[in-house]
Length: 131
Length: 390
Image 1 (cartoon, one colour):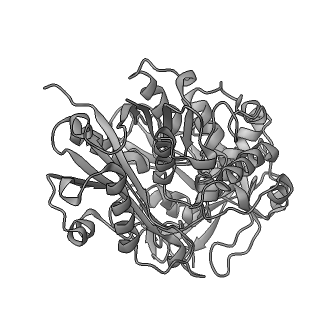
Image 2: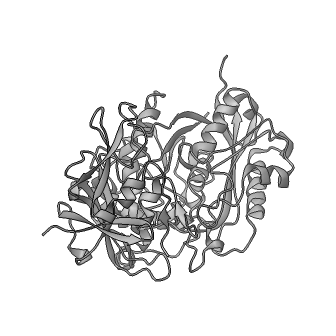
């Protein structure tokens, strides 16, 4: 089974937002800085006024790789991993597996939208090609 | 306080191999004996010990020994000891040792790295997969591993994809890195991979994480390496000409992740190297031997550009022009590197650079080598060092 993230005060909203189909990103409400991975304090202005906001979950592939090596028992290969620049959160990238497409079709510049896979109490973001 | 200069006085490596089934401590002791013999020192001369990352089980066989076990087993009495998981890459223990001898905390520091990743690897416990066997993860890799981005080959793979896209590099360029280092390894009796490697072999090998294939990835091994860092005044009576640590760089300009750095055609190395050149009058053109971290082949062009041996985006031409292989003006990883020599986490690369400066490179010796750079680390983390004879 794949390891899951430990839920903490700074990351719970990010990992559980998918329960409502929402990609939750941390923003500083004092200076508007987008913070990822999420923190309890804004790395830019040190304000503690950090809050999560649902973003549309749309973005553009900055880079990607297609993994061919099974790293553990039961891992199905190949699959693509995409590092995606989020439209609504400047400077934030979400790295996730690409689903519902041929992995070889992913390219830099591809438009993606977020979907989620639930495992236990975690909703892992995944990318699928935008319609 | 007047600071002493820090030097390297001895290096030693165990008989490294795959599936040696030899305890890490015996590898370490063998490397330590060889390093002391190289330096002309005895165990009682050692008064400091330093390692990365310390005893750690974050992936199988990654670091079976900490300073405590080694002090006990080797019966060392020390005035300085430290193990550093969060420093400037695998180079951190060498940098801290240099600071220790410069400030008089110790005279001769035994710096070590020991790995048993080859013996520890099983079907379900893979080397270098962080968090292997744990239910829940924290830290930076908790944003990668659960997404099935489990291996550093994935992280390096997406860096390479972006670099290829921006600068027109192809797999053939990385093939020159891999086959060139193998050509060096054929003159290094301690390299784990010595059979010939052709470009066809390279291009025909299975893909691991695109665009990186099997021969773009370094080789997990069992082994240990010891490097002795000494105060310059204490180095005068050693067996080898002391190698002065001319400058070090450890700057880190972006957060500790493999995906958030604004420009992923650069990495931590670029920060660390820019910092290094501010501390010396020497220039890249003064360098004879290059020891560049090659956990994956793609890190070599990144390090070349980071150190300024060529401009941004120019590494592919620099490599294609024959600069880095045997006979090149800026030979890289002359012992075969980690791609052919085995993954000693940077220590093996520095071991080779020191051997070159002492004229001990055998059939791969770079004539007249006086000055070397070493860069350790990939992705967000890096340490850089410039060493010279005299």
